[in-house]
Length: 535
Image 1 (cartoon, rainbow, N blue to C red):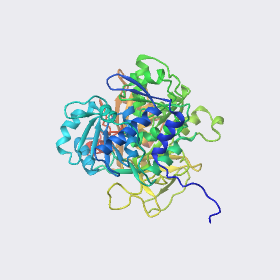
Image 2 (image 1 turned 30 degrees about the horizontal axis):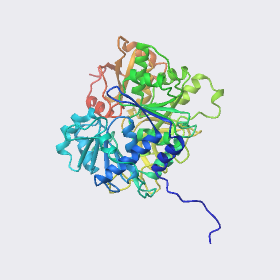
Image 3 (image 1 turned 30 degrees about the vertical axis):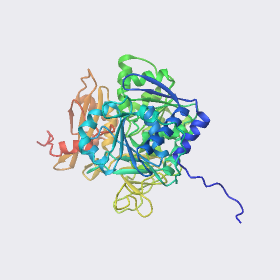
Image 4 (image 1 turned 90 degrees about the vertical axis):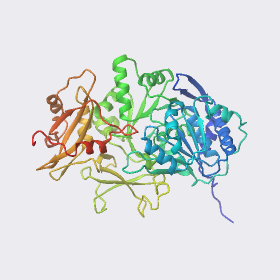
């Protein structure tokens, strides 16, 4: 007879929505739809909507393990789908509508999706690709009434009564699927499990991560198709936070929602915040009750961090990837934060931060030898933990090594206090005279120059130094900033030998589907570029 013990209840995402409905049922869920409608719901109603969706999926013949795809922006129906698909044992495949057509076809066929729920805005994509989608049997309009041969979501789930008990789930059952967008070759599928998502949600609640609570009002600008919206729809359910969704990333709409809905927490990639700054500069307005901003996806420029912090907003710089669910590190404030000067605090926030409990980091050299945490030595960044990938969907081999270490493809250094700092992607680092120049640091320094809206640094051939930096610059509207002015600014920010050999002004820069600079395209475009100094 055992001497005692604790209950072994499986960790499933349905526990999250059950808790939110039971303990925080009246807490609002606000959706700004693409047609301009503002809809108010709450966790109790989302819980019912999710159960109805589970019933509706079963009525369509969906069974445990089937993939249900969404091609959609952020709104309450999408939120309900996260839980409704999981509740009947399905796997929600959040498809990124910004991918190229051949990628969209590949990932939906590779996932063997059986149902596709999509926003009306993406109807042209669906109509265009439908003949090539081999496994999808049912197409449902997420945000509008039935149209032609397409079911409408509300009519579809409205035929069910919601008297549904979640199917029996094991915590290691899969519940989510998201494909990477930044890899070479075909996108790779990352399969999330109930257990990994719940543990990740617990981590988000920590004060040193997202600092979520029942008092929080969270507006995720990051799309729900981008790495689980960084886990916010799960974390918010765990504490019953109010959620505010927008099906558009129009800066004026986001500002309206932030102010009128009293948003306290938000999260998005740097390009979104640049757009919002531009709107504020043009139209005025205040920050409302916004108190915490998480910036991730790519490195945040120092000038962006300074502006937010000067407004009294706590800024957390995050690092992660689809393969890490996605939180890997977060810019938590150290114990001596209040003793630092403002510049020291900004210096700290520009780095990618520390791991939360559950994640381990290390850096290794090309021989896989572990490198010191001295804040000086750069190496390949590896990560492991309970919400880190083990194997890609349908892959033959593990993505992690025998000890669980996953190679991220990033180059980083780790400081003695455990703070991690990304110095570059392994493929983006500029190799000059046997030394490395961080394209990320050079770009962020350039964006701090007055008149610069965006910048990208790429290595171009040099007969003596192997590579030298070429800086591509997009000016702010109305700006006439010159090469000389940018160089003068850079001389105060980076080592002299890092200064670009040439600055080229361009109208725009290419981005990935998730808003990151598309360095691969830039490297290909400029791989034979002849610097004027050596032409």
